[in-house]
Image 1: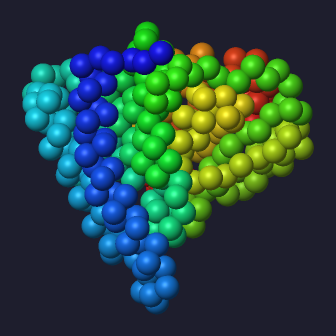
Image 2: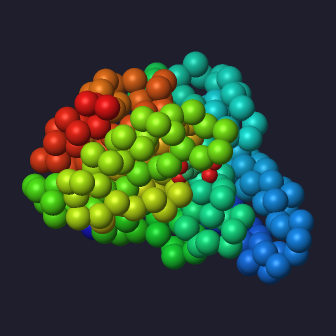
Length: 263
Ligand code: IPD
């Protein structure tokens, strides 16, 4: 089953166009690993270029919508209702190291609510897309979160606060509690894909602290439209405000919340 709306055409068209250059740039980055300076300037340029393509394409299609861009910041909307929330390369560290696990993430917000979301990993050609009330899809396949009911059978993903970020101590406590209760913990380094994998039932849950709105806007809707639960780590709803996120299938969400919120 496929979802083919006008918005789908606009969003997937923009993502496909930006992805063509990103894929070429990723090929270059793989070559640059052996140079001593590394590819970081090149990757910043690729990031900015991809964001420019996305902004141009989305503006052509919806000229009155605003933006929240990882690189370019806030651009006010002319219609006072809509804004695109965009990360041109989520998983920048993976991209920089030649690890083929990164994504373009585009969320669309209307009056403060996310109404469409796209997460695209161009390397494996996986396009995740959701619209509010219309379901979540991976390419043409309808998505459902996993049906596992026991933490001991579950694979849970997370994001580790890295150099310069706060929260190392509470994170280690959360990790200790979760790893003691589950079949496996994963840290793949691209939050938008972590959420998409929860929507696809590949992961049974995911948690991370301190995310930015562009890392998760699209993924939040993917999880909800695939039947999952997504809250802050204490059960609150201000996800984009706090950046603290816990997503899981409905059976496991409460169990994970109890483990993590006790820290
Ligand atoms: C990062 C990734 C990563 C997460 C970090 C984010 P970026 O986004 O989503 O998985 O652990 O917290 O900052 O910087 O690659 O766009």
